[in-house]
Image (cartoon, rainbow, N blue to C red; front, side):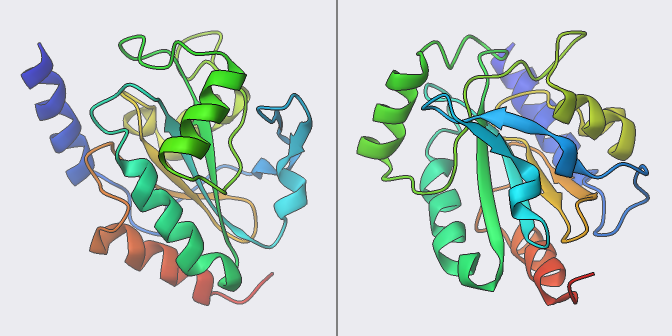
Length: 187
């Protein structure tokens, strides 16, 4: 079963949408999450920035990608990139911890400085509105099928592209898409 999951992720990563794919009318700026400390985290705070939103988990085979995500954030934040992690326990029960445990894990093991939200549901009828918007705007294949799916949001707040779990944070495909969005003039 695990092999089948990896094969599916690999195939889906090849289907990743190009930058500036056709997207829905609504932007993400109306969405509000909670931080690991329970404070509101409104995406409107990041208006004009490029966002890389990732569904994350602490006990996944892809968890080491946290290091690459932090490096992306450190490399590009001065140019306007914000990485946001959204923990989810939907896939293999690989994020069973509470907010304090998630915060401790990410800060001690990976020294994460980018924002991480409280745990959210990423699939099904109870999915967080962000993930529902992903499916509506980018299509059914963009819906997360495992941990560490990555979603690129342009400076205008519209979803631009998605990348499957198998796409590493330092991959040429992802960094080219980020740089293309960072090079776009603010709206």
